[in-house]
Length: 255
Image 1 (cartoon, rainbow, N blue to C red):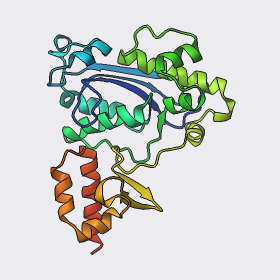
Image 2 (image 1 turned 135 degrees about the vertical axis):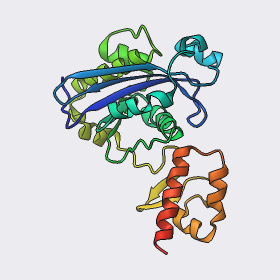
Image 3 (image 1 turned 180 degrees about the vertical axis):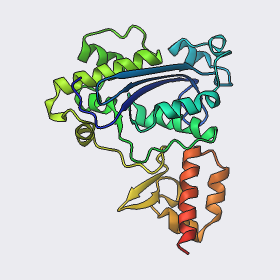
């Protein structure tokens, strides 16, 4: 193993009913967890999304309604997945913008707060796009000289992502061989909520959309408290609603 880990790194991949991080659901999750010793543990689950899987999604990952009709729901495996990911940094391919937001939504939907605080989030796609700018299958071929035969199988994609990371470390000595050095190279995202509805400006949380874009969230909530109610009733992600609720509570405590 050519990467130095301070704590376990869990690289995961999801197959889903679609690409909407708010409304779509997980149909398969696979995790490759690597310990600092180099030992690996794997977990793969088919998941009943409790909704029809659109044909377009089935055509991509090959998972049909019939295949998941007897599979557990996410609620039934949530604690198991949460425990498996406990104390892990998280990695994936395009995971910061897709897989992690959907996973967090699924946890929040069943009443579990999957806390990202203190975790390192390593998106292997960011290294690849800085250097080569192609898909995971192309990355696997380019870095590992292998064909990704089971592309869009979550387990195959997760393992391929792990192998790509190893090959990137070998190919690009300048990115280093620690999670910290890789994030220093790609840039560690400082997001407030996973949907990027809020961002940090000079250490102040501000709106990143709508009529209050660029304004302090706390200030807006003080002077226009009904905006909070509008957002809580709107089509925003559960994580976004969780974050604005936390900001509101902090604002009230300061009064």
